[in-house]
Length: 302
Image 1 (spheres, rainbow, N blue to C red):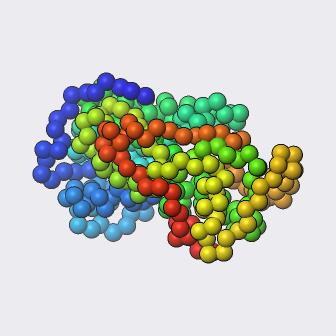
Image 2: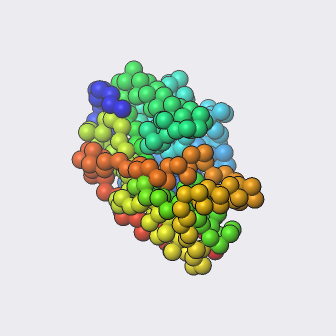
Image 3: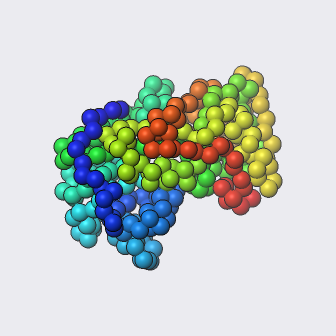
């Protein structure tokens, strides 16, 4: 998704800058916040249950459905580290004066575009529409927007991918995969995403652009799961089953209620390559994600 670069003021010229951050208490927001504060930014953040204010950080109580009147009328940058659809709707109608917007979406806008499940196709469409809405609104007001699209996020223990696998494996002591679960993956650490958002602020090459943000290592789905389970203090067993036998085991697990919350199409995607090019983000703002090295602290206690 490419948009013409709008004319923006040189936000880096400010000696003390102010940011409005949505999703500050999420995994990406928690990685971005200390970088902003360390660089001397003044941060306004929104939360349903705000923590205590501290130097440089002011919390506002509310949600996108009930935004407080205390939000600033002017900031130097807006960061959206939460749901892109909700942010895009707010931003399209907001009157806040801001030259720079950085919003997180997801590579699911591409990987789920042709999914068999209607809900997943709808999610992909919603993500694409939301990204376009942000770019259109930014262009209309002469601001520079950047859309960051992570791959499979890990590192905080709150993701819906590897943490879900760990939870399922811990409950049963075993995790079963089809023998052909060799689709390529690029898990990305949440801290690298916070670093990417911070690095993109003053990078002109990122203005008006969207970037996939994969992790620093590409590996097969099975190897990703094996490495994840192996890092736990009490590693569950990883079994691989062929074709019909795996389908039977999957059916039995569903019947027993052990796979509640497993996303539609997740098993089919184990066989698909979901890999993206890191080069555009590297070139534009020096994006340098770490290789995949999970440890037990990323997934809670055994």
